[in-house]
Structure formats: structure tokens, C-alpha cells
Amino acid sequence: MDLHNLRLYISFLNTLSLSSLFKNPNPNPCFLVSKTTHLHTHTEPPLLLFNSSLSYWIMEVAGEVLASESQLHVLAVDDSHVDRKVIEKLLKISSCKVTTVESGARALQFLGLDEEKGSLGFNGLKVNLIITDYSMPGMTGYELLKKIKRSSTFREIPVVIMSSENILTRIDSCLEEGAEEFLVKPVKLADVKRVMNDCIMRGETEGNKRRRVDKRKFEDDNHASSSSSSSSSIPSSPSSPLPSSPSTAATSSPLHSLKRAKLGDHN
Amino acid sequence: MDVVNQLQRQFIDYSASLHREGFLDDQFTQLQKRQDDNSPDFVVEVASLFFEDCEKLINNMARALEQQQGVDFKQVDASVHQLKGSSSSIGAMRVKDVCIAFRSFCEAQNREGCLRCLQQVTHEYSLLKNKLQTLFRLQQQILAAGGSIPVVE
Image (cartoon, rainbow over all chains, first blue to last red; front, side, top):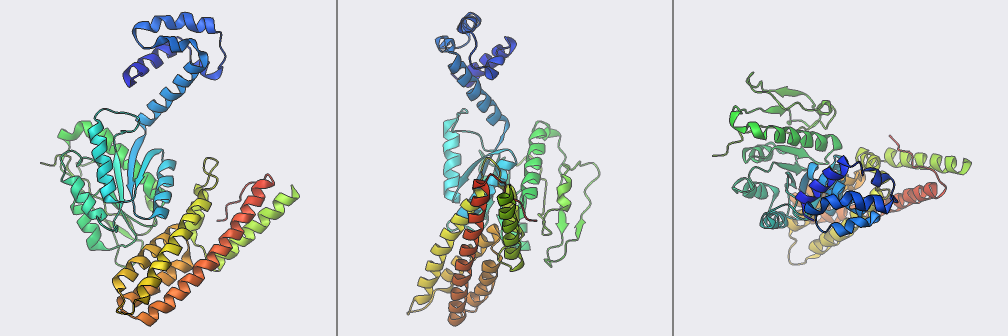
């Protein structure tokens, strides 16, 4: 049953109030048959629906598909197994679907496969965000970032860099190449939640891309001494609305990310 | 539920001592908070991965430092860097601190210093492993007795 028909089926079932099926897996089978014969033209094969437990299964699967569609899918790249496990957990807590890979090469492979699959399938979920470690053998996170931003197919995917080393020149070059954020490890849940919120905000404004004014906003937190937690922000132009960060910004680690919102048009 | 209370008390005290003695830092507490009913073994799993990492990396360092014809300090440093990263991610503070010192010796290409650090890091890793195994055992006992794991701030 493809996604489109599945949706039709779900909405039709809802109108018939068959969602009660979900709560009570043993409804009167005769009732089920009479209701579902209407669906002949919409779905196939309708014969399956005569079995109440199969309908129950279909409802469950459909629920999962629809839920996963509304969840953001994050591709996490890190050569450290420990870090992959941790970042996966933080992302899942932040209600994301997560795919973890151990290298930049694998990440590109995954994206490539994603592309080839074309339409959405269970295994071909579109990637909404890439979060990658900086220092990796082979291809660094920076190199991966460049490859993604220079690709016409993938450059719109936001990329976040993570690093255990808080080096200003490193942060600058990542942001120059188009990274959304630079997170200092160990990454906190607050950081992940903030990044996901920004990603959602970004998604919501996708439709207004053409009307978006060029905005460059630097949040320059003092990195010179690790003990300092003061932040001085460069004032942005009054006409550019900032995506509102949650109040967790105040409680996240003292070594903050430098953030820059870029113009959506990358011509 | 006296048994549970007793075990929980033990767990809290032991946890507190590990923090006090610098074996674990706040990052470990953060990981414990991420544990939930869906993933009750999360911290144990991360710890296992960490110890696997430790063993592999320590072996790499040892092999690199043994080279008679000349030590590749960059290689040693790469392994130390990785270990520092993992230990930081799990909150293994003492291991991480040794790694920081270790990196300086790598940079200075000081073989003696490096060997000393290697010894220290091996020692810290095995100490931590024992301590965490004790902690996890307590955890198991609490769960087996029907209690829940207290989170130590």
C-alpha cells in the first residue's frame, strides 16, 4: 500500500470512527466488512481488511509512518563510538529520527543513496540536518561540510559541527563555509534542543525565502578564556527578526557557538 | 522496602564518592539523566563502549611508543586525542586529565613522559572500570529489588 493510499485510508477510517478499533482489537468482524467495502476503489487489496487484527496492524504502521514524516531526520557523523551513542540519545530525546555513521565518506554514501531512492520510502527518509564531529580520520567534518555546501543537491541541508577543541579560527572557518552552529563537546542536551528548534524555525521560513533580507548575525561569546562566560553580541539590523532561542541559552556551556544566519539564496 | 532503601542509600553514597574523588564529573550525571524506561541500560552501554575504546587506544599507544626505530608521536597523539574525547563524553574526569598531560608530552616528543602517562592512563582506566562495575552492580540490585535508580546531582 503506498503512502498516498495509506493516508486516504487513514482519513477515511477516521471519518468512520474506526479509530475505536485501535482501542478494542476485537470488534465485530461483520461490522468491519460492511464498512470497508466502500474502500474498494481507494485501496488495495481490501480483502486484508476483513481481518480485524490486520487492520489494527495497518493503523499502527500508518501511525508510525505519519509520525516519522513529521519528525526531523538527523544524520550524525562521528568516528567515536561513544560519541555516536551519546549524540544519538540526545537527538532521540529531542524527538528526532537519527541515523549515525562513522565517517564523512559514509555520510556522503548515505546521502547519495538517499538521493537515488527518489521518492520517500521507509529507508529513504529525507535528511533535515547533519551534525558532524570536526576531527575525524580521512575526511574531517570541515571537509564534509564543504562538500555538502558545494553540492547543488545538498547545500540546503543545515550542518552543525561538533568539536572538543574550542579554537576560534576553526569556528570561524566552519561558519564561513556555511555551518549553522559550532558546538563544543561534550555536547549538552540543551545545545541539541536549541539546534533542533532553530532547524524547525528555519523550515517554517523556507516558504518565505525570497522575501528574506540578507541577515548576518554574530553572537560573539568570549572564547579567549575558558572561565569567562560573558557574552557580547554584535547588534543586528533592526529589520531582521532573529529566530528566538529558548531560554536554555543562558544555561548551556560557557563556550557558546557562534551563529550566523545566511541568506537562503546561494547563487 | 527496607532493602531497597538501603541499596539506594549505598548507591547514592558510592556515586557521591566517585564524584568527590574525581573519577566522574557532571557529564556522567548528565548521561544518567538521559536513561529512561525505553533505554534502562543506556549508561552501562556507553560505559562498555568506552572501555572497549580505552583498551584499543591504550594498545595503539603502547605499540607506537615501543617502536625502537623512532616513535611516531603524531600517531600517539592521535590516539590520546581520541581517548580524551571519549573520556570527556562519558565524564571520566581522571582519565581525561591524564590525557591532557599526555598530549603535552607528545607535543614535546618526550618518550619518557609519554610512557609515564601511558602507565597512569592504564591505571586510571582500570580503577574506573572496577568502580563503575561496582556502581552498576548496585544499580542491578536496586532494580532487582523493585526499586528505582536515584539520580545523584
